Amino acid sequence: MNPTFTTYRAIGESGPAWFPGEVQHMRNLAALADGTKGTMLLQMPLTWAFRRGAPLAPNWVYKGPEGGIPDDHALATQPPTAANGWSASRTDLYLQAQGVLNQDGQSYTGHYWYQTMVDLSADKIRGEVYLMLPGLFNEAWLYINGEMVAHRSSYIEPSWRNDYTFEWDVNIASRLKPGNNVIAIRGFNPHHFGGMFRRPFLYQRDG
Image (spheres, rainbow, N blue to C red):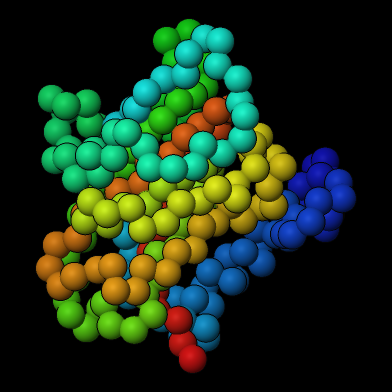
């Protein structure tokens, strides 16, 4: 196998490397769930609702993270149905591998939405609750019950300029309520890979 995938920091990148990085990343995630550094509260659904957003114009040029509140943020609470453009999407496989492509067959570029609903008891939302997105491409915005609570602007395009983890760890303490909670993610993919590719989970940090 090419040493890029097996040798630690074989190509001079910072952060976790490819193969040893994946192993270490899984160990780090396990520590957040098994009581070593945190306790898992809920494994998020494997399948979420998905909707394409605004496509990129043919003459579009990437100028860095967009920032700000998107105009279509109302989709964060819109009931996901096929009639209004929503379909099912796995969270353990990036979008293009699930057939989300442009009309010309190339990787889908533009905005997209994920949405799911979770029923949480009062004891599940006490303390420092985090949403771990262990594998997520692209700049992203997180909404909980229709309110934007976090913006991920530190992601670097194209994808290979980031370290191996691709994770987004968000403190959502006080953002959740007992009962049903709508969790929505808006992403923006300007180049190549897009969306989630490792299943998210909620956890509480220990100590």
